[in-house]
Length: 65
Image 1 (cartoon, rainbow, N blue to C red):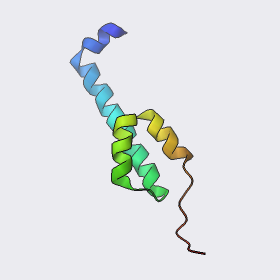
Image 2 (tube, helix red, strand yellow; image 1 turned 45 degrees about the horizontal axis):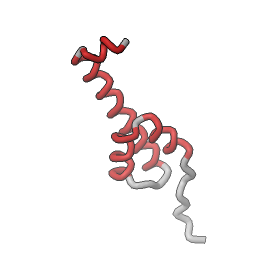
Image 3 (spheres, rainbow, N blue to C red; image 1 turned 90 degrees about the vertical axis):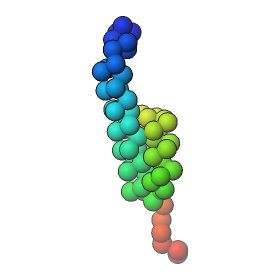
Image 4 (cartoon, rainbow, N blue to C red; image 1 turned 60 degrees about the vertical axis):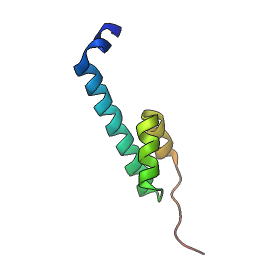
């Protein structure tokens, strides 16, 4: 397993998947009323944990009452 991490195509594939998970986390957070750019950065750094947190976020209510 660790030997395959020396293969550039494996590293590239994992980086693409990590970026996609980060973008999905940002999209989920945006749908719940959060800032997309902020969550994109969080998602690109955090990856899967950021996606889990975004899924657990409560939606922001825009109703002032």
